[in-house]
Amino acid sequence: MRLGFTDATGYEWPFRRITLADYDDLAAVGLDVEAVSEDLGKLADLIQNRRKFAAVLWWFVGAAVEAAKLTPREFHARLDGDVMHAAAIAVRDAVIDFFPYPAAVKAKLIGRLTAGQGTEEAPDGCDAAPTNTPPSPAGSTPEG
View 1 (tube, rainbow, N blue to C red):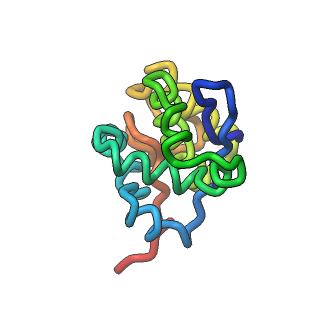
View 2: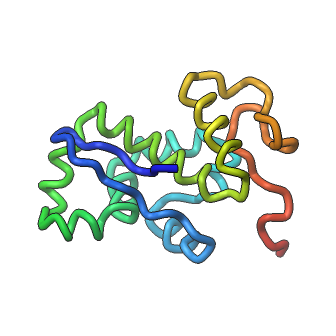
């Protein structure tokens, strides 16, 4: 699955993939992966906080921005409303991608959410998935 977004100049920014080791780093910049996986509304809350959302995007693409020799301001100048929407979808998709479901199931879930059909039943193979949120696999996080 390709994760990332295209900016206003047409440049594609591929995302780093989330690993279990990244949970704390992402939480520190404002993205609670587990909370967003359980309730996509929490992603909307993050997006409304411009500074936190910018920090989350930087986590995903900051190294690539620096490699492209752009300053943070130059990078942010490429983020208009349409691009911010695409970046938000990319963050959502990165959270979905993290959880251990087969690629076909993830693609089907993302397709339903993108089409605005997230309130339908969960895709095949996602028995425990909430009806309007990405699946949060049982037993995927240690207790306690």
